Amino acid sequence: MNRIVISTGGGDAPGLNAVIYSVVKSSQARGWEVYGSRSGYRGLLELDELVRLTDEQVRDITPTGGTILGSTNKGNPFAMPVENLAGEIHLRDVSDRIMTNFNRMGFLCHIAVGGDGSLEIAHRFAVEKGMPVIGVPKTIDNDLEATQMTFGFDTAVSTATEAIDKLHSTAKSHDRVLIVEVMGRDSGWIALSSGISGGADIVLIPEIPFNVETICRKITDNELHGKHYAIIVVAEGACAEKSGRIHKKTDKSEIGRQELLLGGIGEWVAAKIRKNSGKDTRSMVLGHLQRGGSPTTFDRLLALRFGAAAVRMAENNQFDQMVSLVNGEMEAVPLADAIKQRKKVPLSSDKIMTAREIGICLGDY
Ligand code: F6P
Image (tube, rainbow, N blue to C red; front, top):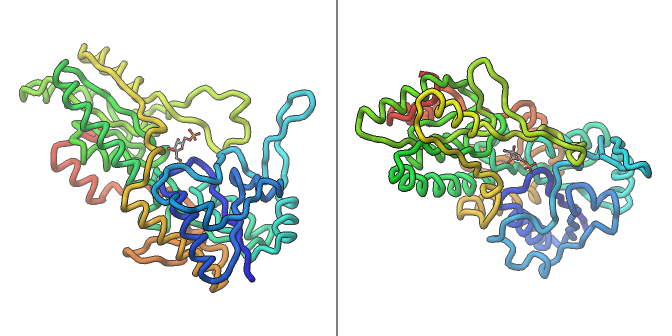
């Protein structure tokens, strides 16, 4: 009987539980056993954190947010933060211990559900340690290459759109500029999709460095046309021409993270607008609201399809690959292709053209 292990790593995304459900059910249909590794690789590191996943564990989890296995974005086994007796944190490579446990458990393969960081680690295990891995593309940011879409993105966009919808009435009542900062480290997929759908006046994304004067001109233009308010959607990774991205201060608890925390660009833009135009301007950060809640129908279905396709790949010994959405169908693509770079919004894409054609300013002109 085959036995497989599944883990969920990196920032969570709506649909993770649907993938777990689908992997468990599809495996059971083949008479296989499934184990879940808690908090990314922790279950493979400490075997008491490994949990047998049966019907009972996964019953009714498809519509639920989060992950029943837990997740972490500080769990890179090649550089795991470990605290010594003096309270100092240093990074240790625990990958060999994970391989020993993986082999001891007799696993056929590891299904790693994650974004670019987690899939990079999975690929490293495949190449350097010979672990048979299959990736499943997860991230609300939708910035993974080699798949048309990741699961979690649709839900995040719906949440952001609903928030933008609600800002219109209050912005109008107070003649204010309201700025909403959404997630998206390197790519503006969430900002652009929700900004277009929610009727924003200005959308700022990492792919297009913005100019503060251009933004103020759009606000003035609104005024000239009798619209005394404006809605701006800004991705956390967006930045002004010739300036860097804005990071939050990090502390010791962040050691071992793959990336620095971003945040604060919304307030930065608000301060510039207040100074340049005198307009009453407020900003808000949507933050982790975008990662929470029940997955949309689209995300559930995508996640369930990804899970079942990953088990099919295991059956066919297709390892060091990722299940991917290509032209609406499930395909296996090399993990190396998925992680080689972040998927940006192409500047010539239909979404960019649509935004400009319906009068949304993207901060460049
Ligand atoms: O990768 C998804 C993401 O939501 C990014 O947009 C964001 O920068 C990051 O996760 C934040 O992660 P966390 O708050 O969990 O550290």
